[in-house]
Amino acid sequence: MNRETNLLNLKPTPARLDSQQAADYLGFKPHDIPILVSTGLLKPLGHSAPNAVKYFATVTLEELRTNVQWLARATDAVSRHWQGKNARRSSPAHNSV
Image 1: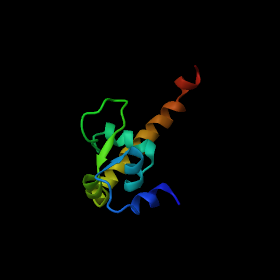
Image 2: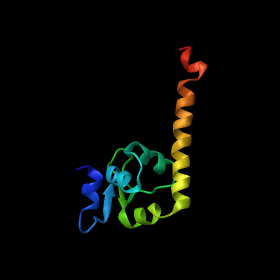
Image 3: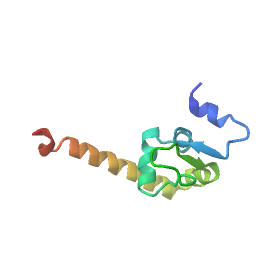
């Protein structure tokens, strides 16, 4: 049984989810969550240190996962991030080093 299935079978759903759980809940990959946070599309709870575990409110995640416009913006942000990263990797300046 995968982690997402285990998460969705919990009764009641926890009030806050960590990054991995939030990614599963929203349908993104865990490495996409920092991208969504850095672009301001997803806000963690509290004021944790940059290297601390981030938690997200389940009620907010539920609103976001049912908002088609937010999902489109989040998907575009993740796509732009990886396109930029891949473009930098394959740029001639990077290859000459």
